[in-house]
Amino acid sequence: MSLTEKDKAAVKALWAKISKSADAIGADALSRMLLVYPQTKTYFSHWPDTKAGSEPVKKHGKKIMGGVGLAVSKIDDLAAGLLKLSELHAFKLRVDPANFKLLAHCLQVVIANMFPKDFTPEAHVACDKFLANVALALSEKYR
Amino acid sequence: MVTWTDFERATIQDIFSKIDYDIVGPDALSRCLIVYPWTQRYFGSFGNLYNAAAIASNPKVAAHGKVVLGGLEKALKNMDDIKQAYADLSVLHSEKLQVDPDNFKLLADCLTIVVASQLGKDFTPEVHAAFAKFLAVVVAALRKQYH
Image (tube, rainbow over all chains, first blue to last red; front, side, top):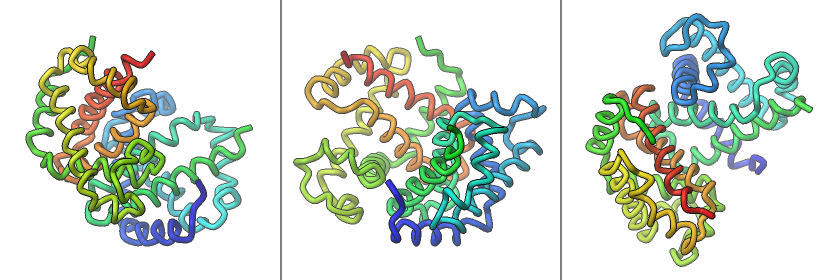
């Protein structure tokens, strides 16, 4: 389900609207994922606190959104653009790729919550496809 | 046996009292058909589903969205035994409608996103988690009679 030119345009348009709030979106999405899907906490046992608003969650949410922003800028070749991140996730972090779907869902819940008028069904399908493709690019180096 | 905390019970009742059934049902179903187009396979008799605009304005989709939300109300009223309350619905979806049960999760995800867009600040992470648990129980109950 690769991205059409229409999808790419929709993703860039949505990103233009939401990117100023990237840090808040990242922190909110991450804290929701940790709460709604508690099995994801297993990757963060080294954090003292996984609650919403805690420092490690805010810091990491910002880092994740940096990755999303990078993906938007490399939308024409995600596999190449996210190569380093893929190596990180494959060899160091070893996050089970099933979890990418969970974070993608939480990201979209937050975007819908904060930007209800912008997250139209058309923006939603483009965003869902985009995040699925990002997940695929991140899993590229796994095996 | 599903156990609900007082917070979860109160939160789920509260969500349903706040949302507009006539908007949420139709919105969630049309989003599902738009974002996951393969789900359209179950709606061959609904007429024009050609693009997002057609789906969003299709009266049969809207009507069916309300039916779906009515089904959720049944779960709301029977929270302590959703499995039993949904036995007939599960048989219906498996034997008559022949819906791939993986689709239930897709619709649940769209419902979550629509409710998130409706409730704004009220849709805190804790409220989100309670709603997600409710939908997961509903989905499991719908899957129960698939053999």
